[in-house]
Image (tube, rainbow, N blue to C red; front, side, top):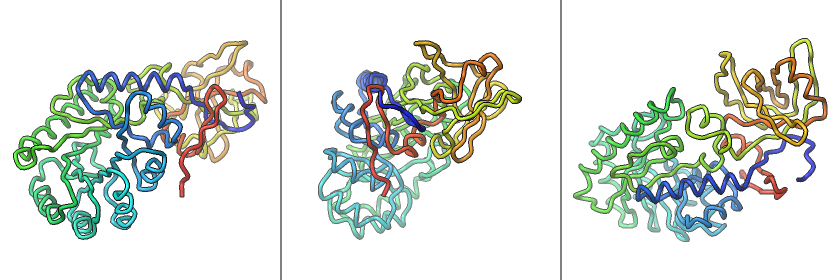
Length: 366
């Protein structure tokens, strides 16, 4: 292992491979295409791990990310973010070299795409099935009709079907709530397919969130799933009941720089610029920014929720610990933090090191 002297994101390659294999097997079991979302890891090297399992179609969240992965050999990409008409020239260039799908949810974007597309582009209509972030509400068939009319003006454009992200599963209070949100989204998409499949017999339905992809067992009528977080998982997924602690492949390793016995607090070099400020409610009702692993002899021990990352500022992290554990942690030690949200943590860090010491660079941000 490379010597660690500052906040360092460590990933366990074997755990990642197990997570990928598990999702691949689930997709096969339910006769689904797995088009994993690469915004979680944003790394060509990690992308190669997916190819071991036959994955050749991916999802990304920006034109820049699509360009990066296209330059690394991926030639079937869905850009799962509402079409940014200011990037239409780059989208056209990309569509000239790969099979590209984009998302449309409004007439303005559809008009620009229909008037300017110079290469074949697949188009999904983004449907809001309850997340209330982006997308056409499932019942607004009049808006869907008007957008489809616009898209038909350009023969280069091909309507692929309906796509949704059931993102509200991430705020579920129970696994039953995840099942319920997933089933509700399923029914809404199937209703749309029943309405439009006669005119578009090849159209598909695409869903994409890690919680439902991980634990749900009803995908009737769905053609494709697009989970991303599952490659790493994180505390949020664990708290939802979606994964086990052993499935979480990422840890932020941070040096201990200070101790305050009067408060039973440990200060680490590792703050919001390393971990993000995503949090969960701890068992004591307070904000939790990460779970803590310490080394005892040759073993690593996950401390219980009485010991947790309780505050973050830019570079500082403050860990609240019990008196007994306070004595076990010394200045100069390295502690491991399990992040609340692995996607944001990885994005902030920009590179990772495997447990074997291999450096993995992520895509450039600009």
